Image (cartoon, rainbow, N blue to C red; front, top):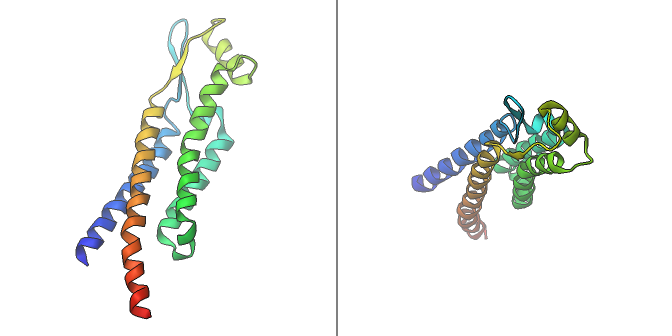
Length: 158
């Protein structure tokens, strides 16, 4: 029984580290633009604050689903939505920076001082991949370790 508890601690630790990295990535550069004199950076919080707030809600719901038995049957769906929401603001920010008719692109052109600045992804994207992998593995581990224990308890009750 203690080995099962140790594995659960690892899954919970990975879940918290993954969520922490996803939150940290919100404030790291997701878009980098080479300007005339410096490298301009933008975070997902700068570009899409509402998507970022939805990401925070999804991550909080994921943490709740890991601990609340009432949310057990929804845990995998919540995990999928949370992982998608980890990437959605970053991908949307990058596309907004490339889309010529958007306000983000106009701001980038104005701030960089160039008509066609080079936009490339920032370090936040790498951190988001690490966060998504950690969260996915943690949820998989919680689910796979929780299944046999739940089946055994059902068999004992019957």
